[in-house]
Length: 290
Image 1 (tube, rainbow, N blue to C red):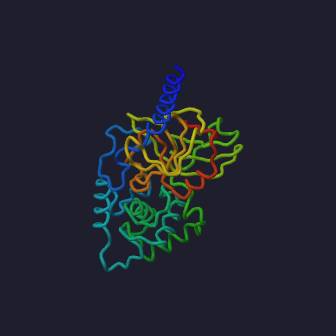
Image 2: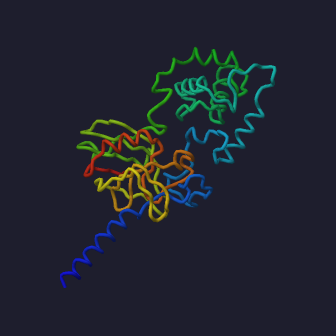
Image 3: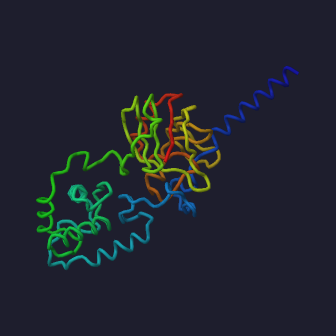
């Protein structure tokens, strides 16, 4: 009987660990190079992002946006007008242009250095308001006017810590060591005693596999974990609710909000998450809220 109880107890522990380890994992689209479609009924956290990753850069999976970019490119001024920056270009000067346009409230997304449909629309708007030819491309005259109408961008303006604006912390995040995760702003703020230490963009599960909300604790961590259900990598995983974890997602980094997880909190900035993984301890609090 004693031997039988030992065997039953061993099986029970192994089952619990297996459930916790495999209950999450990314959607099939998380797999590198996957062409699977995103969930048909995603939640707010799984809708296409209004961010630089959908600004019509070649290779991004956004057909409608790409069509818009093509229309914008075809509407560009004739070759007789010398362009400094135009649709399809990519440079640090464009990053500065985008930061200046954001100062002027003509862009809401973070600078990327890629000149896509959002940048084209913002430039057209500026040109129309300032009596310039609304071509959507930046010539010498337009660039000088933009420079005189704005300030030289700071380092944070050129490369902000997150694409999404960080939400006000939930009251439950104001004490102790907390990963404060907002579904509304789609951001994670690492906080210690009410002070924000670092922030990063996140995405969540789909409508059918939602990320749970509430107050949790980090149960365990795994730097190199692979989902045993979906067989996809989950680097820097910090499990907080059964099989749901905060972890790096290569798919999120590549496709943005055009995909979703199976309930986990995906992070796309690997270097930031690596530092967070080192800082977070088992037992630290996790708050997921709207």
